[in-house]
Length: 120
Figure 1 (tube, one colour):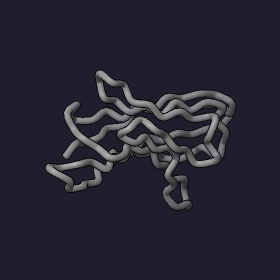
Figure 2: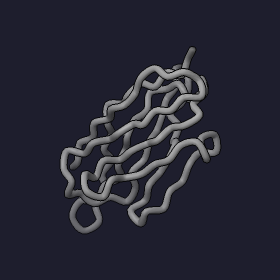
Figure 3: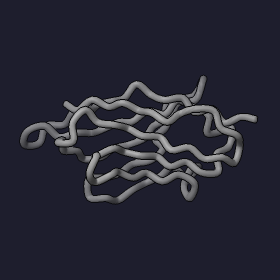
């Protein structure tokens, strides 16, 4: 199973931008979806953006038009470009993979998370 490591979080002012990265332990893995989730203090975990194996994407309404999920074809790193950040985007962001083992077995893999704080 692939292991995931997030990076790129930090403190940013409202209106600013950040790019999160999710680096897999291997470039050679198959998946159904790769996702970014976030969890703010006292709130449930929320699915933010999904990248399917066919390249299609989905976003939660609150980030649509501001965030972009993408994956580098060479390095296989998953990115989340976040623009026009506001304090409501403050959360710990985690990378997730719904991977494929063998013929059709599924597994879930999570990164440890990276914190994003949007504040003056």
